[in-house]
Length: 507
Ligand code: FAD
Ligand code: DLZ
Ligand code: SF4
Image (cartoon, rainbow, N blue to C red; front, side, top):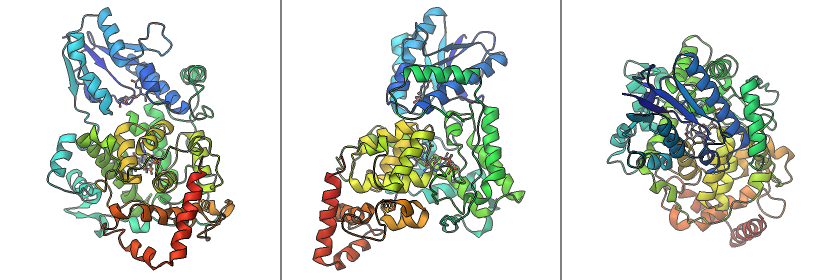
């Protein structure tokens, strides 16, 4: 049975289900660079270069292993610009009995794929993506009957199911979660190791030239380019993390230092999400590092929780609630995304640093995304669709299945508390505690009102005040209304006035 096996840009794993049962003599593996995917949002230049280079390297690797590979480059004059158009074109060149593909990472691609069988007149088999540790069906069964979902309980079940960091049926170290130990502020004199710097070979150079020519108007810096683009190199990134950064990962997981975008994080999301690394191998590498005495339990547990907990949990929520999840807007927020998210032009030093690092690296670590960029979008009441689009554009690890729940659910609370139990809203003192940004800011973090006050300080209270109807009954945040109620009428009015002036001057 001659089969066309389509592999998408985020399916670059040799173990991908669409390759199972491949007949080397007859089947054709197909990868295509298509305009539609590169522009349905205007991805960061580095993200496009990374993915095209990784796709080309993966195709080369498969060819060397004896697979028959067809590959469409973006600038091929016959390129139709869409997945369906490219599949159709290949079907005109060869007779195929069926098309096999693995479940895509985005709902819109799945919806499109489901039309192919009828349009092309060839059976299309869409196989489960078994690189993930929890299938959408298993997640749906877990979620069934629960009014609110909590990651912590999902995570514990995953630990038990996969027997990770377990002693019989008990969590190693006597606790499931060591987060309380993972909130150390950055201390002075920390020397953060240099991140992985990949070499630019001929394939990457050709792709960079293509991106420079075709996507010049997209956001972000193309150079310097240091991503790994092969599985072998991605494994080196993982190894380098375990050897050099893992020891401090837990302690400084929430810390931010000006000029240190990479901190002690692993920087593996790019590779996990496009398939060059697999989640279980990263988790096993972390567990082995613990038993080899290379990293303490708070680091190891924290890291593993992100991968088998948060990563799988957000994917479960995505598939359970798409397409309606995309429409959520609990606070009816409608402000336009301010241009500072693209330019970094703002007097708020924390925001400026995070935007400029994002522009340079197509990366920001979790707390920058959550407590600076996300916190501001929440407090300023920016429309969820615009915030989602920005996060999908700017990060090289962004695909809708992981981006949307983090933005709509985690930072914007736009799902009304389904993913998270309370909004991650905070004033300037949190950022001041966890970073050194405030030291070189034009605003004063200790000042609560007036033109020099840190905007996060009054925006925080104004956000609560504006959304009283929706939040006052939330038991985790409700008590803040008592604090607000104890403020004098003048103080409350000053908060409202400062916020109104600041927000109306945002553009
Ligand atoms: P580390 O801190 O070293 O963590 C290890 C791994 O855990 C990551 O590589 C990632 O695979 C996983 N992980 C950690 N937190 C999360 C999470 N909340 N959700 C899913 N996986 C997680 N992650 C993406 O992969 N793509 C996105 O588009 C994305 N968008 C985000 C948007 C917002 C607003 C927020 C708050 C978080 C987002 N995250 C996203 C999660 C997280 O910020 C990134 O996974 C992380 O910063 C990637 O860097 P790292 O590999 O150094 O992670
Ligand atoms: C993100 C992306 C980009 C920029 N370009 C391509 C491409 O040209 N070809 C491809 O197969 N995949 C690309 N991708 C990744 C896809 O957007 C991703 O596979 C789908 O969104 C499904 O998750
Ligand atoms: Fe950010 Fe406020 Fe600190 Fe300035 S003072 S860096 S705006 S938290």
